[in-house]
Image: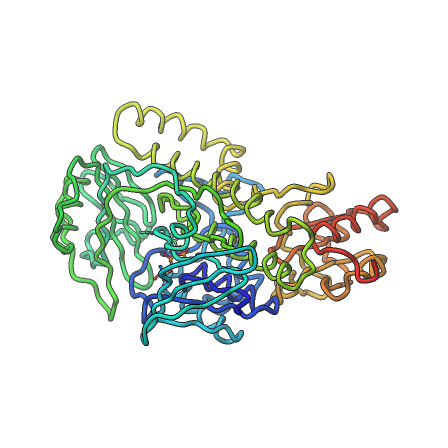
Length: 511
Ligand SMILES: Cc1cc2nc3c(=O)[nH]c(=O)nc-3n(C[C@H](O)[C@H](O)[C@H](O)COP(=O)(O)OP(=O)(O)OC[C@H]3O[C@@H](n4cnc5c(N)ncnc54)[C@H](O)[C@@H]3O)c2cc1C
């Protein structure tokens, strides 16, 4: 019997596999594609997920040291000036999804995870003790038994369907979006801003969503190749046998959106080059993220517009949220109900992503009333507090899981602390173990009953600690389970620390 089978070797399934392996569980990953996909979806990661990768040493593998937050971003095709805010939480990593998935696959393999490519999940039943899976592999069908099964099998999740979990939401079919890797003649580029000079429109900034009366245009000169996207409002239905998209379709779409013939050339370099037509948009949230021994992560649990790039910020953090809780359950030390907190914590986060992607979709819609709404919204975005609110919403810095105390850091993502010797918190969390960080030098004994599960690091901060924290109990997913700002935590705080240790990491050894 397997401990955990994961259907889907997309980024979220692979991240979960890495987290389980770090926690001492060897999952089996089934992936129906025989080879990694060459399709690219995400062009980058936006928000806390970038810090999360840093805290596992994975950012380094993709792009070297983590960069500071970006000075500006886009919300619903409106500019977010992040220089206005005191706490800029919006970190961005511009790396294509296929590279992220390749890196995660390499890491999972290093950690001993078995990934079976060309193996498709076809049926699933469960009882109180196990899940039985039917799989079709290159050598034909076979059957597997597992204690838990996780569907990381994308928006059309077979796991979700087989487990009888509904996927309510809306399908909007009034848009068609064409994206392509192209070259653009030099006379149309604006070296000063990196944007695109289009007659009748001035300079369209790079990596920006530019709204016109008929749609939306984006020009993204990525180091790996220039990407243009034109999204139109349309009444056309998808033809049954729609021919594959061509560069001429892209040119025509841009003409309709910008009212100008932009002379596009074939892309340079080896590729693979993108030519993608997407119709409509699904916004759906699974009725539940768990049915007995079957769980869902990533797109299997939620789909929404890609506007603003929130998908992997949500999905990869789902994977990390689930990994340690599932491992604790399998190891037998999980407190009652720990696995259920996966959904109680992550569903509200998914609901907020659904909310802000729908809000952004409304803000880019056609019509005079939307133009008026945008004008007002644009005025609000000159207020630092409004920009802070939106930046925290997009990055996920506003997420606060149910705290156990009223310390301002309790329930929040642990701040990027640096110890006096220069060690960054991110260097202490690559093992994905629970961590008690003690700058008071007085809490070592409090951890004693959990010394097999919780690591202790004592030391001093460099004084930049957010909220003046002197001690923090940090869960493997990076969220604070307890914190103190006292030079020497008193009995009440120590009791709260014990309660937090028991709430998240189970009974003490000697109990
Ligand atoms: C056009 C577009 C642009 C996007 N841009 C961004 C962006 O900039 N930033 C961002 O963060 N997000 C972006 N996203 C969202 C992001 O791509 C998704 O959230 C992400 O792919 C979800 O990963 P996943 O692992 O959950 O699912 P997927 O990537 O869909 O992977 C699921 C895997 O499961 C496999 N599978 C399916 N069925 C079975 C089965 N029965 N048995 C075995 N294997 C199976 C599939 O072959 C696949 O490999 C974008 C999405 C789109 C469509």
